[in-house]
Length: 491
Image (cartoon, rainbow, N blue to C red; front, side, top):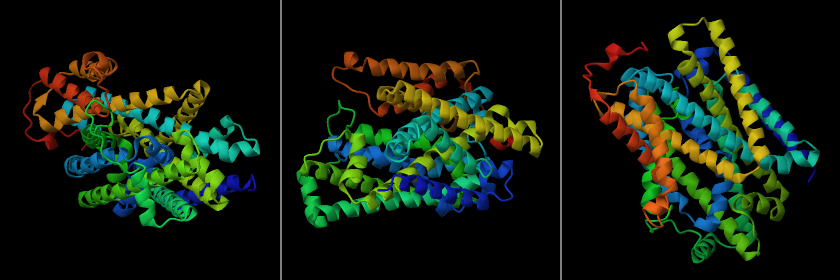
């Protein structure tokens, strides 16, 4: 394969994104950057959210993990599915009722400024760490297959990718992201289907024979039933539901696309359609992982889980399939980062700087928004360099763990605001939202001493949120909520 072919494809792909950005951002202002002018088609949002939810890490890691854990990941997906209905019919009506641009403004409305600031800060911390980890892992793969063969170093490829993302998101914001994510989701799913069909053809087995062989090798098992282990079914299922509620319903990046839809009814249709589609798409990724693992077994191949997919596609399948794989990987990279930078810009401008309070002139808003957007892009770049400098995968795992902890306080804050009619004193909120994650961490690292052989899994998020809720309740007092609309500071 010509070593310049893949870089040329990357440049052409980026050119297509730029064209979409130009067309979608015409007439855009600071308000449309954050809200899409409430004109985003619900079906495009639903389709594009698939790419955002999966990310480049899912594209590579979920198929690779099948070799060691079969379809246990699907237990989590079933929990996701349940959680999306809570988001659609509990949280979305709340956001539309108060016409929120930043979902964390609800915390100010219900619990005061401290809750608002801490909620936004946890989102900014979590999304910054999570998005840069995804960016780092995928740039590593692109560096190996695309940039290294033509002599481009890691720091140069990182700058190039970040500048590309910055170029097509800087003006249009949500209006652009909705359309580019749709395109990128299409290419990601195309790569998935092409890889499945090619592997099946390569092994010269009918679909029925292939499925029987996968079952025989234990590569399609879904349920895990040892309560002490991390992948126990109910840990995954319940944890998955709360992961969705917290990491989708309480996440500005995911919700800014939903609340950019014109009506609540359309936003709910988007969420329901998306939830059913994600069941199918994740099943296809796991099916691909089963086929890859079976192919490796039949041919005596041994790879690390994250190397299984790219290595087999590059070295054992036609070059055309590898090109499709790289396009799919690129398509998995951009949605997980472009939306994060846009959401972080929106949250910082609205929640930290206070765009909606300060009534800044439009020209000043545009100027500040650009500075913030570029600053987050620079921060992403520096963090990617930091991960590369450490070059230690345990650091990446630790960052993901820290990021998951930050959603627990958000879950507790929103649950307390929605489910009770009590008010927590302002001094208690900073103490509670810092104490709960610390307690969860201490429980997690001492789990084996307290409950012999027990391993914490996805229930950490639920425990974290529950602790936050209980501590807020214990420090709270009765508060009469006559009509939130009358006290709404947003209007």
